[in-house]
Length: 288
Image 1: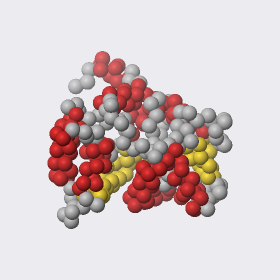
Image 2: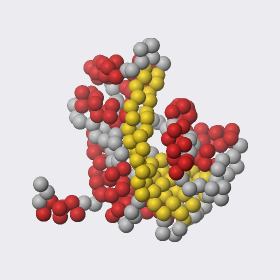
Image 3: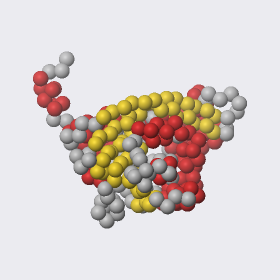
Image 4: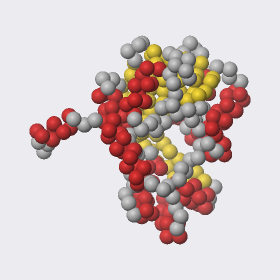
């Protein structure tokens, strides 16, 4: 039972600080672990782009269907990557500005925009925190979106900035439960590194930050399938060894045993697939 003094503590929770604390816990738990994505490298960005082409069609279609985009719309895509949303929205809208800090991702985005023959896309090679609303952007935007790209440490400041950039709507897409790579990490991290796995903040924390900002956002939850496919278990091992910072022979044995246990393929390849849940969180700005 929750006592009266406990309710007082609950009412005093600063959800922006909870978001930061979860980010800090992830950093402490994975201290010394190098970045496994390396999005500045074009090869990694191209791998991600191919994965998006093969596996993200359903999610992209769902996101495009829910956003109020017309032929007159100006869109801001925060954390655009190689353009899985930027490019299809550019075919539908008047203009799209992409925010993407990684040089490799920007290079692939620029290439794909050129291949698509689109003249209504520009991009800013900065993090959202670094973007100057007046100098870097052509405000206002009818729709501001961030799709699984909320890496910001001070999420309240980031959300305030998104709200200021929009004259219409802000749409956020974030996981509700752990994505597949998080659940795999939770299953194996302690055996690998001797400490429990730490997962970052999710949609629940995000919505509470918005609530404390006086933004009473809409929420829609949907399932999201994630599938890992590799030509063989060795290729899968190389991928996950980097992701989970596997270095010693003992760690290698743990990872190989885990991957063999979860592999759903019986033809010599590697296949693992699970559903998670993601939330669409959106609101209409006061400037609308």
